[in-house]
Length: 290
Image (cartoon, rainbow, N blue to C red):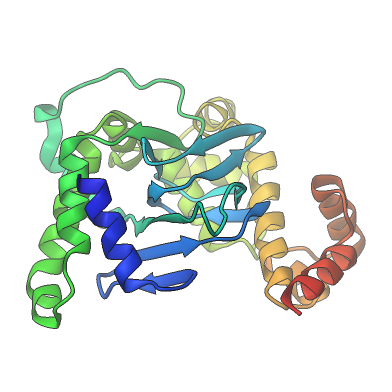
């Protein structure tokens, strides 16, 4: 019943496809009725909850297909491929996107401390699916029910905090708490990299920022993301570049914007990852926008 009510709210507030800003910081409703194949994207820390249809996210070859039974949690910036392969007019994709507040997640993780229910953290692979539980469903419903300006102003932050807490208590709570623990050097290194893609960042620099030796950092980084630091850095830069080119930026500007100084190296690595040159990608994107 809770998911049905959330779907009804989305249908009422969104007569067509697209994104809808709820007025609550970082919370958007979305709706799509057109199938879109998986394309390069970068997930910032977020939760994506589906109430109709299904989405797909691919991370380093691992496919995560999820619908109304599970929500996706991505606690740190991750280079993925994402799409809506089954969306159709008679089978619309609808859901809620919640940008995770890193400061709030860290604060709640510290407050929960030893009182949190401890569950073993399975192999995370950077993103995780978690089954809806009553706490998450009810907190999400209370959040998206807010529409009146006064209600949004007075209750919005409290209900957003309640949802963050429900996520930390859920099935993937241990996974999320591990990512937002104050001493998580891997998350700290990823956050720095995400904000400095145009700079030259060496593995030694990242290891130092994480407070680890190069060998330990390499091992723990791969455990957390499935990729080596070099593979991850390259995927982040190329995914960001592909998104910028799709949005209309020139190939040379996109390459420079993510830290490439050699056009030939950028073209070679781009084609190796996506099977098409940057200019072919640009031409395809232009035809899709026309």
